[in-house]
Length: 228
Image: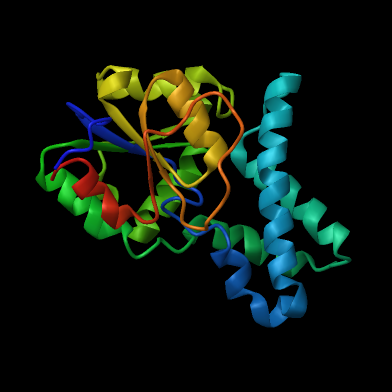
């Protein structure tokens, strides 16, 4: 049965990093070299990566996500006293082939079989997104992989969410938006999307305007939510 908050959905739009792709998989692959600093590095890397997107947007000092990701990694390595240029290069390279969560491909296949449009809407720079999509072998299951670079500002600016409407030629209320990031889910809901917050990690809800229409714990719950 369709969830009453998701009527007449024409497109499912997904955040990429943390939602489809495991942002911690790069550091996990270098765990032998990082040792007991692996988890701390990955957490701080991700934290600063997001903070820099928000700060750059507020400062009107845009840099693409590849630079932001590198700057955040430099901060994390410096903070933890890690000086290893070869390791830095490896971590950045691994970020182009992050591990896709196991529920990604089966869910996209079901959505496509039901005739829904599917797309990524991400902070990622276009070449980063292309590399991640190809590594996960999901290009065939997407109508588009949309980057904020087309509007030059990061989420949760409403211009980013409008990009999905424009490119997919659907109105906001016919888009089901899925993100693991609670702040992104709030931003998308405030914009007008029907939002399924995928709370993979048991986070607390944000205290922000814009509330998700539903909360799921994995992508495999999405087709049932949409009545497929």
